[in-house]
Structure formats: structure tokens, C-alpha cells
Image (cartoon, rainbow, N blue to C red):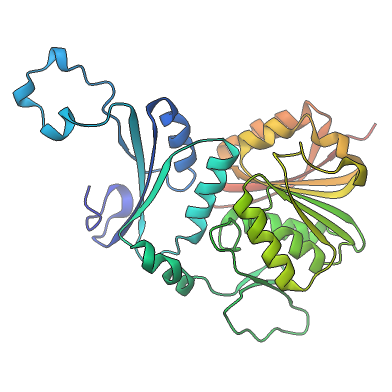
Length: 319
């Protein structure tokens, strides 16, 4: 498929950027599930099931004959003018969480250009009533009630432009109380911990499995001048300092399958009034997350939706 042609429901002829993920053939289904969260129109290249014994070799394209049968690729096509920062960092985050090894390519923009060109699409984003996410290199004149969060996300997830980030920040603004102890699981760029600190949280603990995300989050925290945020590395809740719990507010902007996996462990870090904010949930998986949390004594108290995504606030069921 050539990137200069429209496809599916896109309609008009325009320029596209291809994001391609290549994995072992055995991991193709997992790769497709992750890529479908970026776009539901997928292009799959999988030559593993071609049986050359039943075909006439001279009628098969040479490219297919010589194709790698051990690996497969899945691609999505995004408008060339779209900011690729969030989809690429979202993809990287999901691959890390799912322990999925693969090669990610953005075709239609060179790596050299991408290092800086994506910044042209990242502008100040207002979320909720008070939070404004501002790129570190942008000038911005805040209003009297604005809480400005300056970010340089690099390739870590969390700039405020993705629906999942906007949804959870809106809930964070509602549930973050002055002086509370906050835990951010899968912190990415550190955006949620920084927002919580700006909203008055007393202590914030931000963890991520990806060493790059830990580094980026630490740099953003340092640049913010906030001294009440601790950043560390953890595989979900495994490395979280439990001596500091229970926490008053826990945020997890990850993905449905990972939220379901951590459902059995998170209640131990909650007291009766703790609020757990879960985001990164595609609408079709929302009930699965609710059921998993219910199986561990947590009930939904509020849900926010945008496009095909939702964020859900949970608390322990009252006796």
C-alpha cells in the first residue's frame, strides 16, 4: 500500500505516515491488538501460512517466495500532518508492558527529521478546569487559575494529546485532594505525578517498567522544580515501596489487559477511601476491567468517555 493513496473510510487522497511493527509470527495477534488501539484499520504482512508445495512456484511473486516466514508485520496509516509523538510512545509503552519484542518503523518521515519535527505539532493543551500542559519549548501566558505543567516527553508516553491522558487528568483534577499521598503506576513522561503535585498532593510516587520512561519522568520532575515526587522503576506494583502505603490516590494509565492483571494486587495498597483511577481502556474492554476489579472488591464510582476510550474511578466496596 502506498502512503499517497487513501484507504478504507479515509475517503480523500492525502499523504500518510505508516507506522509498522514487525514481530515474531507467534506474536502477531498480540501486535495486532496493540496496533488496533492506534487505528482500527490494519495492514498485515504474514507469509508464514503459504504452502509452497501446493502452488506452482513460477506463479508466485518472488517477494513472497523470499519473504521472512519467521516474522510478520502490522501497519497503521496516520495523516502525515498528525503529531506522531503520542501514537509512537503509546506503542512503545504497550510493548514494554506486554514484554513484546519487535521493530517499530515510521515510514514517511526520516529519523533525523522526526527528532525535532514532531515538536511542531505539540502545542499547549488545556485539560479540565485548571490544568494546561505546555511543551517545555513553548511560551505560554497562564490565566490566574491555570496550573501550568511543562513537559518534554521525548519518546515517553504522556503529552496530554491522547484521549487516555486527557481523561485521567480530568478525573485526577476531581479526586486529587490537598496533602494526599499519590501513586502513579506506568508513569511514562511523569505527567500524572506532576499534575497531582500541582493540584496539591503531598507526596507522589511515580513508577514505570521502561528505563527510558523512568529517565524522562525524572528529568521532567527535576525541570518542574517539584520536590515531592519520587520516580522509580517497577514492573507494575512489584517494585512499589509498600511501606509508604496505603495511598490516597492511585493512577494507572496503561491498558485493559494490564489493569486486569494488577487488579488482585492493588487493593492491598488502598484504604477504604482510596480512589483508583484507571485509564487506557478501550470501550469494548471496559466491562472486562470492571469485572476484574469487582472480583477483588472494587466498584466503579465514576466513568469518563472520549471517542473510543474511557477512564474509570474505583473505590473499595462499602461493607
